[in-house]
Image 1: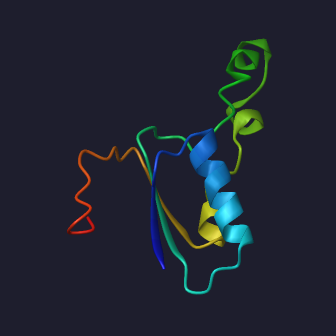
Image 2: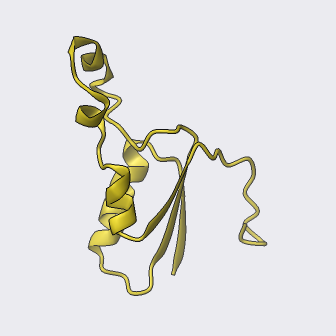
Length: 87
């Protein structure tokens, strides 16, 4: 099964976690994120100015995506979706 997630925000990242927990065999998961950072906690972003680091706010590090076989494409905004051609 091939799944493409457009958006690597908090919801996209949580979706990946939930999908992985299903144990779907032969899952091919690709995630596109416009930002160059992996998903981070936007709700508590202001705490960055109080001393939290980028790592503190990161929901899952890039290594987590790699370890789970997720093709994470950061800094790669989706411009168009063609559902008929599946691309």
